[in-house]
Image (cartoon, rainbow over the protein chains, first blue to last red):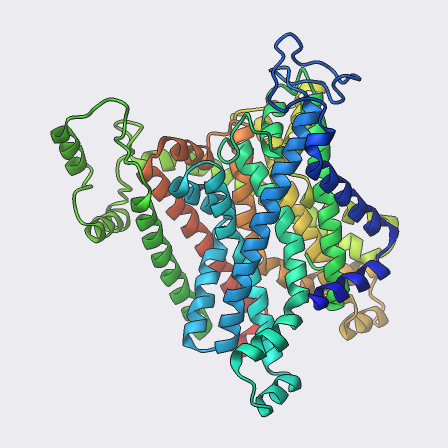
Length: 283
Length: 306
């Protein structure tokens, strides 16, 4: 934990105003999501068929949708759902990738070559396609969505951690742990793991926006989060259908999604530049 | 040569693994294709299963299936589109998808390489800032939003381009551009960093000292040596385009393979899904193999390090 703290502290101190702004915006969205029940002016599924497609007003900040539901409240609850899905799945897939990568990098034998070969094979497949197939197996709903995103998300972390562990093993301090006669679990947990904090943070800062996007894609395609539950993908899907006549239904959700994705990507890029100046600007 | 053979072996092994995993995944999925609300008599069900060879053990089904594809180009019957074979549906959608993908990828390569090179050559100036800013936008914005904006702006406000379908060249402009934006942004960023790295090299200084013009050094000497990372990214880029095509074909009603794929997901049409997945995987594996061979043949340094 202290390894994470050190990295983030150093990063915050050297980051410029633009990065701080991005972080503040993400914090703002997070506050909106967490306090959605307090901030929402209406229930997210409260229909009002006499007031459909209303333009933004004092009563409905962002207007209303095809069923007269308050868009502001739906966006708040949508952020709550989209962000929690992204956080939970990113966290779990990074954890799985971490364990897998630690083991494969540490044992470094035929088995680990097969393990990483499997990762390479899965890596060639497009995530959206795999997600759709996995969701057929586990159900085209929330449960299937979560499983699909965890299954497709851990590959990057596994690769990154495996490379990191293999290079760490050749460092003098690991030789010292050999000389001191430490056992494998102690070496892994006390000496290798803290040195993986950097790659893990970078991976997490990429996996979260990736998962925000996957959820939006899948819900947009009609699998994943089901209406009337709002998520960013569902809102974009609903808004897109009527955008010709009622553009506010796509503008507001679109703005929130875009700004969030931009902030995440700015932070991810600069965090990686900070941790690995050699890679500056790559991809 | 050994490297190429090894790469080929890996590609075949990968394909075998994917096809088997794909096949057994389909068998694991709960709910058969003949599950309907109506009660079907068991003998009818058995007859149906026998007709579609669903009564054989799994491994026999798998080998029958692979034999059919490899020797007779027979991908099995579609379970939902009666009387149509999967191979017909695939042959129907695949050319459209490949066309769209190739256009998008070419646009992305041209745009990405040019803007990335210019950004690197003018590092720190407004050209660099603007092109990298656009690249971040291209990576961050979800394609359905870009698509929506494009439809509103070009199709509805200006009315110069059609918003859907896939008939005349004009129909192909919007889907191509929207699909190409994300890979273009990825290529631009990679090209920029790669060119920047190359510009530090000694041979660039030599070329400049020789009296060659800046443009010539940049586009001939620097760019040629910077394209290898871009080349090796072609496989992942194709995967990006493929992922994007699911949303783009859906949005713009393009009658491609991705549209059929989504329909098949909703219809539980297993043979079609299996075929489409296998085909996608085969294309990507083949592309990865090609990039590997190309990289080795383009860069002599890679040939020695076996």
